[in-house]
Image 1 (cartoon, rainbow, N blue to C red):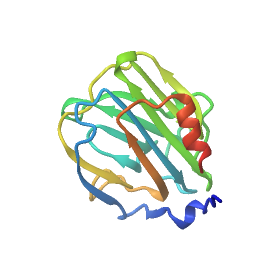
Image 2 (image 1 turned 30 degrees about the horizontal axis):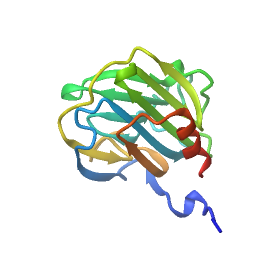
Image 3 (image 1 turned 180 degrees about the vertical axis):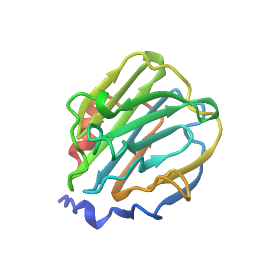
Image 4 (image 1 turned 30 degrees about the vertical axis):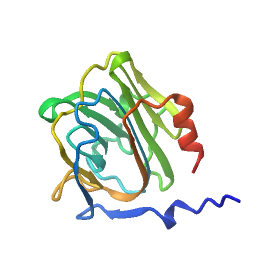
Length: 183
């Protein structure tokens, strides 16, 4: 017997002003050339540049809430040496993406495989953006991993976050769909 409890029973709530989790130094992605990051998010409040997850290798964050064409959309940033961005995915460039800040749970996922120069953004189990010209190596320096902000004093998110997963491989579309369907 499998009982799926509602996310609200196990998620963490962030108030958008000072709540965050500092997971400490995170080196699992250092110099990585493949990655998948998956998270569940729920909110009905826009947080300009609010981070679901952030470190010097990868970020998932809300777009600028003052721009009506990006409200409720998310960006997925891959960073290389010195934390410099080598890919920014999502926002208005992702087809089929709508407002994900609607009070419902949404699955946010990005995969990257340097060997195929492919990065794919999935939202709610569906690929919404595929870029086949992304090339780079994730930042080699260890940095802290933050959930709900980009540090102790900036980019706080207002909403609930659950089930963050980070893989050192690029999951297939079927594997991402399985993650989505499991909850």
